[in-house]
Length: 386
Image (tube, rainbow, N blue to C red; front, top):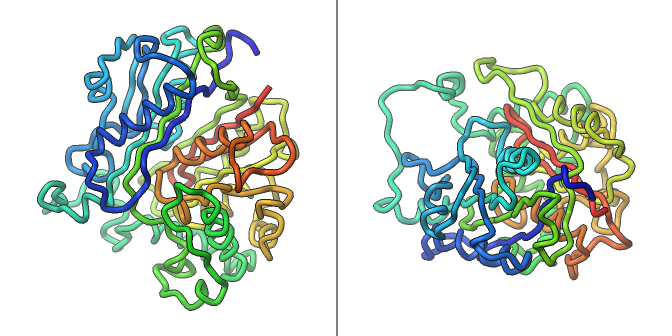
């Protein structure tokens, strides 16, 4: 351990569900309390807050709680805080916090992501859906083509793999099947029923080649990670997990179809900041808002060659809990719920601390990679238990 490093210390997660009635700020406080208790930190020791994308008034289901609200609710004496959407995706908030503690701007930073999308849809009077009479901003590049859902542009990339590299639906299914199998072992997972290949193949299509089971689902929950400075570790009681490397990238949103998703340059850059190699990774927690994104991350991070993702996961044995690269051991977003990126970092820490219980990776995992986004925005973290 070195004083110049940043570590994830306390982690916490609220109840995970659909159409919850507990207020999203209270869900956030639940997760914060769990993280503080694990780290044995008091709120008076917290001096930073970081979130993505901050409170979004027009889309309160998507992001109902901002950094300033948490500072106010807990009386945090913040020397540094941040919240915004214009970063390299959800885990970019953790990257910002790590940079802050490395620079001495804070010692212990609460990073959180709270989602309330299922509840918001169930209570439109409280969480109205915005109505617009014009198209502008980033939607101007997608809405005119009826690409209103991320499923549409993700499907374009997936279909290219079908046409160019021979990706099959049976191969792609292994992301969903693996996620659901692992979710059955996670008591906090949203969906704990198993999924069969026949059920997957017979599901209705959303945007070819993606079917219903290739998509995550709206969830209500909050996830918290505390990022601490290396010289503040004597204040915590849990096993610190070092952020060994970080990387992120953003594509030009004005391009109607970039050649490669942002995960590909991000994956290359991650290994430039560490002596670790893909072969050192014991478990991968890769963003699966749509199943193909996890396939793309496997290629981008060098676990297999570009175009070989489908064959790498074929049959599911390699990415199973007892496989050579256990993938999304908590169920991913397809099984555990749409925790919007933060769930992957939370699970990586759980696994590196050996606290996965029924879903724990065998042996003594010491290195994990976790990611968020992967389309126009992407972030990757390499975590290590020293």
